[in-house]
Length: 308
Ligand code: ASP
Image 1 (cartoon, helix red, strand yellow):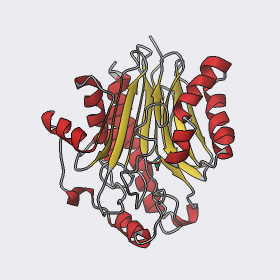
Image 2 (spheres, helix red, strand yellow):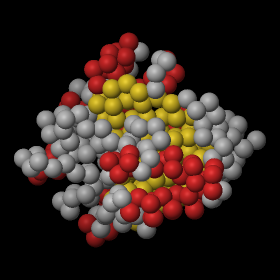
Image 3 (cartoon, rainbow, N blue to C red):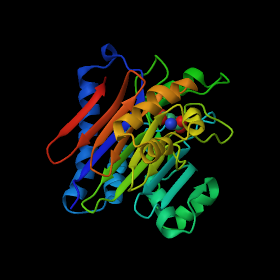
Image 4 (cartoon, rainbow, N blue to C red):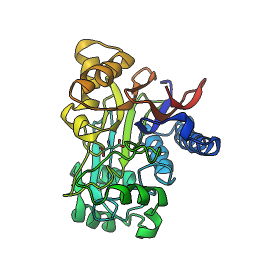
């Protein structure tokens, strides 16, 4: 029987502690606690890591505090286009969706793609058609509306730029969410979900739905979920790179995560972080930003944190 473990994140970026009221901080920590509990209770009952990461991410998607599901950032056109992915490390099955609107839990749609289709990645209209076929829960645009996100978008919508939800000084809310877990059978899973970048256009897709970039799981090495400047995470093939460093170079999970996040990624200009789990149930956090909303839980440790 393997040691069970789960880690989650709610996005990485530069947050200043002075700007976060005790009430807000408490709300973030409680949301992280809830997501951890949702995932861990699955593992505790002998459930699969796939169910655990899905449940943890659903919990984070359902809170407006994070840039995923409810609370997703606004695109240039004032809409929400969400991306998500999920992967299982035993079979190496994976599912991903991109440019999704109106679906309550994009991570569950990604799982449907993995389990109910012969494909890995579906986007836009086609993905929504598939969602309809499988009776995915939908919500109207009011559900996804969040005043903070709206103000963030207002501040830059006329500019020809896009930004990380956490890159502006005007708002300290962080983004993308993810989870990694290992179950009693030693199966590893990882999932990531995001609204992407504020003011994005032209159908921009980040790393979060890309298997190997934002999400990866392999029972021989690790499970990884990333957050940060997606373009750089794609070019760095970050999640898979961590796995490769473990597989080919024999690095430990933490060494591999730090090598990628603190050395390789900054070299190409990327900022952000990731969470990881290895086949022995070790958990790792690594980020090159001021903080990362994060949490982890094993049989003898529960931790949630924001700052370094
Ligand atoms: N990685 C996400 C993206 O580029 C953003 C984030 O992590 O906040 O879409």
